[in-house]
Length: 432
Ligand SMILES: Cc1cc2nc3c(=O)[nH]c(=O)nc-3n(C[C@H](O)[C@H](O)[C@H](O)COP(=O)(O)OP(=O)(O)OC[C@H]3O[C@@H](n4cnc5c(N)ncnc54)[C@H](O)[C@@H]3O)c2cc1C
Image 1: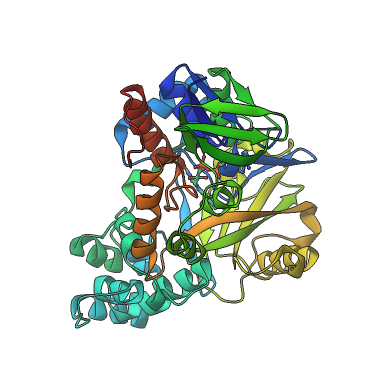
Image 2 (image 1 turned 30 degrees about the vertical axis):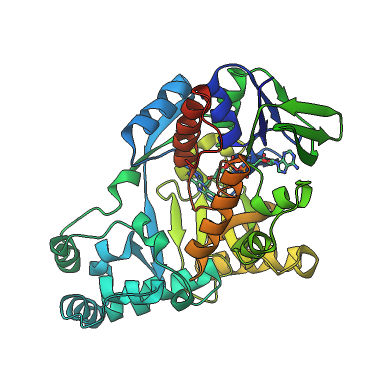
């Protein structure tokens, strides 16, 4: 085969799909999927946090929906913020009416009379965009929870993902007129059965040459060709695409990497995540997809409700909640007490009235080492050094932790399509 694809997550699989032929995928696990994996415990299915099929790119969304055919259904988002013991419509600026009257006045006054200076970091961007009150009540505490770093130490590369609300909508929301924010996610698609991983399985059905249980152990470049060694054998390729987390790639790359490149990689910051499953012996919260929780007492920043995604995620008559809890990457798995995290999650859900702890019939926890790339203030500088280097050795990087960008699977697919077109034209080592 001419093109070697390392890793069988959505990036690797969709690249293979767009290439059509002449590729080989090497995936270390027995199942493909990576971050799009769905776990199972005694009939309860749960994804790595809330995973939905959506995109602001209509072509990619249509492609995904057509690919899935009758395996997906369209659903309406019902996300809420849980703020001081009450629901506020998501996103926060579209739900101000739910706050106390004094708080509404505070939010609107600060939003309209906003003297914050042009931003240079994420914290300043929130203050500049939403004003002090909205930022301090929700934006900053929520973002501190998810990123585990002071937003003042984060760059603004990430904020292009956050749609800015029209002033009119914020005012309307304050006086109780319904408005919708983040409309590109208002309706989403979700597999009818099998959880989010059904998207992965749909790609797999259309592909050949996937080698599962093959962990790439070393990569060499010999006479302009790539030699890849796995636990099972040796492969030679003309072109190589890595979707492996960049940190894992440099461990197995048998090329002398310049120290400044290694340093740039070491300086990238990421968060790990625990996903906690709480299975209930009742169907609950059919009208909710997720809640976002800025409150420090809550272990998770987000809780997803299986009934809002698909009934097929739980056994008949049951439902579940899955909680997303981020950690700084330096917190080792051994240091995390799994049972304590599960207990705290159940405690908080019970305390806030989302569950009765006597209804809990199943729990589980999974750790995801590479969950969120964190855009700190040196992100752009580091990423440029890294991209320039991999471009110079003509090794293609593709995917969330290979390119180290905060992207969802829709953008992974879009990038894979762009790379496939370039590879088909024989263009080597080009950044996508
Ligand atoms: C909490 C959370 C919520 C998300 N929500 C959504 C959402 O709602 N919608 C959405 O579209 N996206 C969502 N995403 C993003 C989405 O999951 C990722 O963008 C996407 O899955 C990344 O795919 P990838 O193929 O680039 O990387 P990965 O999925 O990380 O794939 C890399 C693959 O490489 C394999 N690998 C690693 N090392 C080796 C080795 N040495 N040899 C061989 N193989 C190896 C891994 O096993 C893995 O299969 C979410 C992500 C998170 C963390």
